[in-house]
Length: 102
Image (cartoon, rainbow, N blue to C red; front, side, top):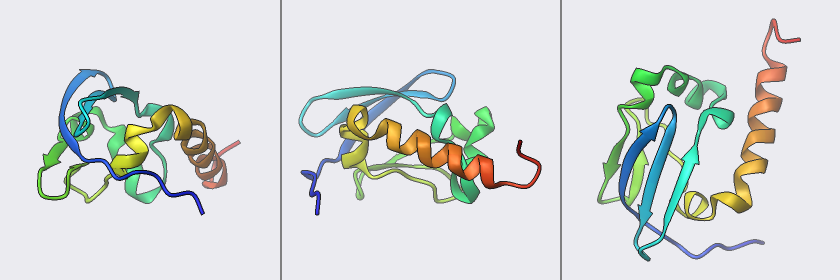
């Protein structure tokens, strides 16, 4: 079983459409374009840019959260280059399984 070190999000900045620059508790940063991974019941509402931009930092949980309860594991955000393709593949699979997709 793959165990990632635990990390907390300590800050973020919206730097573009669906893109956040995220700071972590070890003073590292990731700039993430979330557009490719926004699919499924929980994440699809984030495809509306105004809703996506309502992201907030939950300092108690050390995570980014949206009004509908959507969030991402902060340790996966920390290691995004290693997991981004898995997330994109998952989102594509979800979109392909929706009625009306081709």
